[in-house]
Image (cartoon, rainbow, N blue to C red):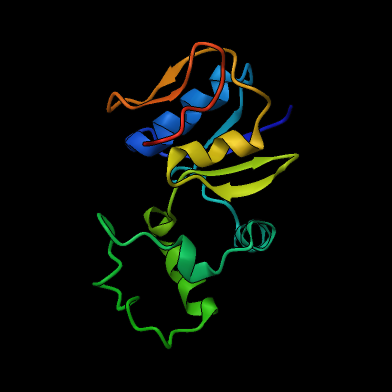
Length: 141
């Protein structure tokens, strides 16, 4: 299975998502989007495939979101895309692309719907067990 993850290695959610991809026996193409951001055209296509708006992919925390006035809800998509092009950190992550679809994997367990079955247990960095020893998803209480 061909999988692409738009990844930030500094992000726990992104690292957990990458771990679940690998736990399914898949070695993804890793794109560190802060170093190699998707083009405007590609990002627009990915958002369309994911059923997301540009605003839904914007990250506020740890970014220049407020300094750039991106909280102004009347800003058009073109202005938001301009901001993401200039500051890739504004793109929320991880965004995962598989033959089963495109998804912003927040929370990281969202990736499970895009992958083959898990090969074994998976526990997130915070200690939350999301896949049992038989590769089955553990539902939160």
